[in-house]
Image (tube, rainbow over all chains, first blue to last red):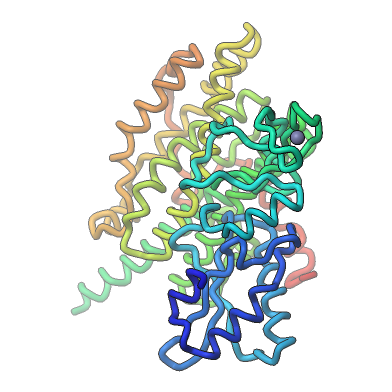
Length: 171
Length: 260
Ligand SMILES: [Zn+2]
């Protein structure tokens, strides 16, 4: 059971249905993982008027994918006849890479992206703990650039197998 | 009764001004950093500045969104960003300063980010949950901005004779604008008294200590006191802001309501 389900109670069949539909919606920038895997899908809420809302959270304040994420959630809901389900964004508590599920971490690694370390993400200029190569598991690696193809990833190279790879930064 | 009414409307106006100040600081600095795209000294710095700008733009969108909600006149973040003229902007004059050379840009970024970090840490305790949530989210981002700028302060200041000189010049240019960051003026004072805004004057000791630490690492002296420039919060800006807005707002002014 995910944290999202616990938050609203798993007994509500509508909530279960919404979570089921949304559990497979991929992240627009890293399609190998779902929004649920990344912890971006925060849950489903029912307001006093009885309306259901899917709650999303942005990764970074200026994440350019925020709009695309809302659009794909809308499209998934509509495609399953859940047209009346609203979508809302919530900032607090702020998203952290710790919310990426174990399954999500494995999917990232299989996709060639080294997943973030566990423990509350401490932004730093130089990564403090060793980053392991998603291809050969070597920890003999070095950071090439603090930013990669998206703001949430940095660029690394493996000194063992010599392959470049991306690392999902702790945040 | 009328005194009460006027005081509550003053507070409401102060709440709007408060959110505007925070949002405009982030918006204008984001726009300045956007100018460096494709022009930074190295590819990695180019990406760093663009991403710092992106963080700030995200913060500006959220903060101006709150300002619009407080105002209650139907203006959203886009309307506030694109449809106000120079006199209605409330950013501090530090962020509208031209980028200058790399050292001046770093000096401006360090002075601003170290202040913004101290401010946002305190803002996490504000009663308005919209503002405290934005601050809590942004603290993680600004921590990186501040460290990036501080590390380059040290590299430039403790680098070559030329890089040291340029950093000293950059700080000398920027330092006269920092007093404004710590001023609690008549507009915001009632909000500070009500516990709804951070008393920025009280951030000074912590900021001074951090600045002294980084200046020591960078082997530069604190710039000598100079004539203070402080008027952005009341809408009196330098010539620079008009040029920034002419670029930022061009599309919406030429083609009002354009979307894609
Ligand atoms: Zn390897």
